[in-house]
Each structure stands twice: as structure tokens, then as C-alpha cells.
Image 1 (cartoon, rainbow, N blue to C red):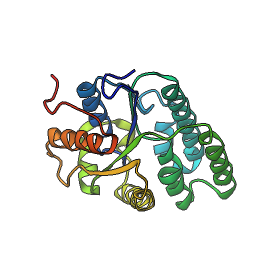
Image 2: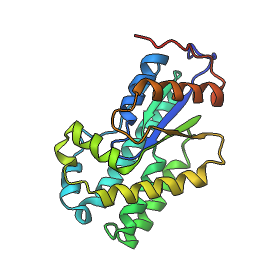
Image 3: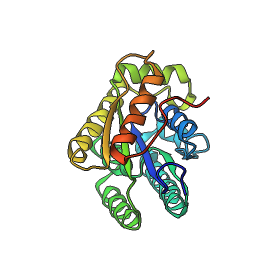
Length: 219
């Protein structure tokens, strides 16, 4: 069982490409002593091909992400320890697959197949105790993506990030009524204070999950 509150918790970090999900996931894990589950990016066999030809590889990529996140979330639910997940399974259908379908990269037949698969898989899952949606403007996202220098991400366009942000905001409007959803603004400048974001995230965990969390960051 977790040392905080006498039970295990499951928190997911959501947000656009380059928003800082991994950074916050690692910082929260250090502070709380929780296990982390990261998005499968480095060893993803489709990602480079997808950015080179979205229409050819969009459906394959989304099914890959869906299967890997289903595996992660199912593992989380069998653990008797608190966990933090970098990106949720719900973003796959609410944001990425939806945007790719609207752009014409996923045709109607594949979209319906994907959506049915998503519904079937998530019916077996328990939602996170809290989803933290990290909000950020597109110019800042572009700068952060540039600075981290991933080769596969060099072809990401401003228009694609804008459409993803619009999908995130649409999802947020519908999800805000849920007690398990919270929005955290990560700022509109590249040099945002990461400690401020961490403390804001910890405060949301305190208030939403009633956790007794020490204020002083762990080294």
C-alpha cells in the first residue's frame, strides 16, 4: 500500500506534444515515491514512419499506442502501489485519433473500427483517480519540441499542434464536470519555473485526492 493516505492512487498526466508531461511525471514520482509508467516513444516502431507519412501510418500508430496504454493501465490496476502515468489512454481517441480522422489521415472505416476497439478495451479499465491536463500555447510547445531535439519530431507543424490543442480544449470542456479531471496551466513561456508547476500539481493532488503531501521537495 502507498505511504500517503494508506491506499494506492492512480494519477495520469495529459497534454499536447512538448507540454512537459514526462518532466512533471518524473518530478511527482520523486516527490511522492510513486511508480511511473511512460509513453512508449523511444522504441516505437511506427513513430518515424508516421511523421514522414501520416496517412499511411496513422491507423497503425494509433492502434500501437492504444494497445501499449491498455497494457500499462491494466498493469497499474493490478499493482498495490501508487502510480503516475505519462499520457492517458483516453487522449488516444479524444484527441489524436479524432484529429487524424478529421484531417483525413484515418478513413471512416478505420475510425469506426478503432473507436469500437477503444470502447471495448476501456470497458475493462478503471479510470485514474485524477487526470491532470497540462495546458500550453502552441509557440511554447514548438520551442520546447525544438529544444529537446527528437529527430522524428522535426516535421511536426504548427497547424497540427493547433488542431491537437483545439481537441484537448474540447475534451477539457466536456471533462471538467468530472471530479477526476483537473487543468494545470504550464505557462506561455519556455522558461517557466518547473518547481512552480510541480507545487501546483501537488496542491491539486492534495485538494482533489485529500492527500497529506509534504510541501518541501525531496532531493
